[in-house]
Figure 1 (cartoon, rainbow, N blue to C red):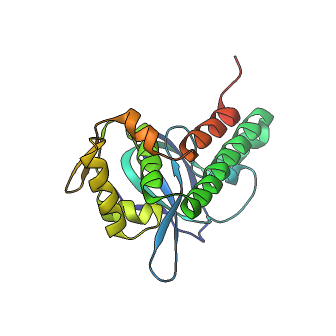
Figure 2: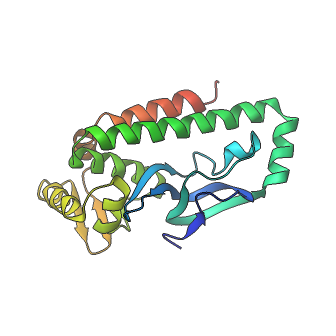
Figure 3: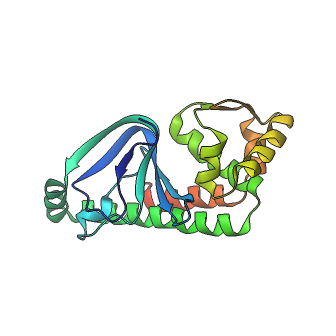
Length: 204
């Protein structure tokens, strides 16, 4: 279910999630009620990879962005498998590095780039994981994800629609010109993609 909380910040994970379809967001909740996404995870990563390497708690809420399917594995079994395989431990460490890289780039992006660039970057990443041009997203939810007021997203979404890049109606955003959206996005989209590929693509 969209916006269902899989893991709460501060809690110990009892299982890891390996998404096959759909996506989840790692979000930080602030005391004044704001919610900001720090990373988006789909079939290209793992929720809870670090638990194979070290005990710990979740540093963020993990919330369903797009409902899908995932395999789950008990933490004890997951850790036992990692203890038996150096290759698996190395791969999981790389997944954590890729996740950290995404979080760091998102933080820099939110601090430095325009709402238009940030929203475009976020929509491109969401499109990758949703496997479709129409995303079931409200402007209010988008505002939470990139850490701005709803009216800022409304102004930018209207401009993007006027430019023929997206089309939106209540609760739905359709990307109608992907290449134009890429040109509108900041460098962070390509940077995150490049770091992800560098860390996780297997050698031939």
